[in-house]
Structures are given as C-alpha cells and as structure tokens.
Image (cartoon, rainbow, N blue to C red; front, side):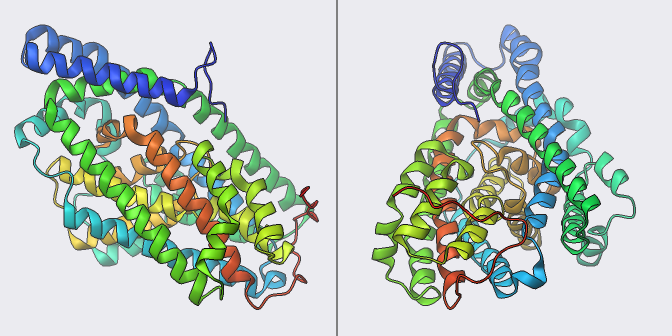
Length: 440
C-alpha cells in the first residue's frame, strides 16, 4: 500500500496533522464560541459533517466486496483439505481458539474499565442527530433486538444478493466461507480460473480502499472538528482511556497468552521464541502491514525457529489474512467503547455476537494499514451502535494499527510453532509453489 503523499510526507503523518488540526479547531470553537453558535451549526452541518460522511460512505461501499473476496481467497488458498490433513485442522482450531481468547480479553477490559463512560448524554445525542441523516441508509438495517433462534436462521441467506443489498453482512460472510470451501473441494481448471477472478476482485477492492484511505487526513480533520466542537475536553479524556485499554489488552495477549501457548502447545521456551522473532515484530510495528511482514516472518520461521519450511509457509501465508487475533481484539474493544460513548447498553448476548463476528471478521480483514476499519464499521451496524462513531477513533488508529499488526504477526508465528510441533516437512499444501529459501 502506498503510504506517502505528494511531497514525500508519509500518510500516517498527514493523518496525525489532520487529527491535530481538527481537534485544535474544534476545541477552540467549543471553548471560545460554543457549539450552539449559528455559524458553528451551519459549518458542522453543511461543510465538515458531510465531508466526514463522504469518507465513511466510501468505506461502507467497499465492505461487501472486500469481505467476500478476502474470505473466499483465504479459504481457497488452504488447498486440498484432505491432503493437508492435520496441519490444516490444527491451524483452523488454533486460529479460532487464540482469536476467541484475544476478543474475550478485550471485552473484559472494556467492561471493567469502561473507557467510554462519562460523556454528557445530551451532547452524545446531539452528535447522533447531526450524523443520523448521513448514515440512515446503513444504520436503518441494523436489528433492534437479537433472538437466538432467529440469529442462527438469519445466518443462512435465502438470497445472497438480497442480503448484500440490505447490508446484512454476516449472511454474506457465511456464503463467502461456503463458497471458498466449494472452491477447495471442486478443484478443476474452471474453478482455478474462477478463483483468479475472485482474487482480481480482491485486488481491485484493495486498490480502491488504498485510494479512499488517502482521503483520511481531510476526513479526520473534518470529523475531529465536529467531535471536539461538541464534546470539548471530554473527548480527549475518553480517547486517552480508549487507547490505554486497547493497548493494555494487547499487552496482556502478547506477553501472557502467547508465551503460555508457545510453552504448553508449542513445546518451546517463550524467551527463545521472542528472541528469534524480533525482526518480524519490528517490521510489523513499523509497516502496520501483516502482508509486508510475511517475507521476514518466513525467514525467521525457517532460519531462527527452525520450523518445517512447508508447514511454516502454509500457516504464515494463510495467517497473514486469516489469523489476525490482534485485529479481532481491537475490533471488539472499539465497538464496546463506542457503545459506551453513545450510552448504548449492549446485552451479554449482543457482546457474544460482537465476539463471534470479530473472530470471523479477522479472517476477512485485509493485512494492510487501516484494513480493519471497514470491518469495524460493519460490526457497529450489526449491533446498532451509530456508524458515524467510527470517526472518533480515526485519529489514533495509526498507532493502534501498528500495535495490533505486531500482535497479528507474532500470533502467526505462534500458530506456526504450535502447528509444526510433531509435524515433518512432508506435507505440501496444494497450489503453493516450492518456496525459495531467503538469503541468510
């Protein structure tokens, strides 16, 4: 993904500049003029508000093609499930388990520390009313209540095109998973060509997302101006609490859950493991991209961890898309934070839904900077949290993106270590070419 703009300034620095400019301007208006001044109401309603909503709508527009193509390709690239045998099932089981633990840690942290509490309900309601028209077509399809039996029934779309048209994302994701399994089971020249078409759709969608993300500095400035003008200093306190809880949950997962998994399931020393993967962790943090870190991870798995090359190649390649438990944790924390921010109480069952969708959404999240933002927007719609709330976290997302990507890449290497235990280098995942050993 391109990370620079004209003049050579990195995109994340432009996003930070937009965040600071919007925040400072909004705070000045809030303190010096007040949110009720006529010209402020006109500006936020006709200029900065619509500018931010255009960015959010562009993200929403790309959600369905992104998730469909990423899920199909992620499953299809697993190759022949029968030939893959234990390695494939162990990878799937570990991915689901470790992602569930990650999301659970995040949800517990948000429920204990409640970083979104304390916002004036009248101000929160004013923000909702301001952005309601821009997100009406999206939020309008979110269910008001969730019934257990109906939930599982609704997972199976009677018409996938109708489900997509009505923004029923979860049924579309289930269809994409089944479609990917079908591609794995029905190998033929025709299905190989179809897989290439789906891969082309994924690449086109990612290119468009890259273009949309380039608008982020302007959108962040507009969104932060609106938010700061309404909330003042309360916004800074809430954002700081949100970042603290999110990073705290990631640290627990990194330095408690991963070492336990490496020691008990992988049969290795956690200290030796982390020493061997220092290079992939640094690359992941600096690039905020699981895909960009993949070549370095493959090298570390073969030459530092001494894992079977063919097993490690399969697990790390699939994991760059499918085993993103850091992203799943971030998505869960963000959804609950925004629910608290807008004084929306999510029931225990709704939080379970968030957890399940975060695990599933981790499979369809692109391994590039800011790739999780469309998934966060989708989950917000599902549980009835205002979609426009995503603007709150855009300004601090780059730092959190770097943290969760480091967690993702480390998790991929943990998965490769666990799956490789007891396996030889005899399993060759179909469809994957023999890797060329990197230079030492």
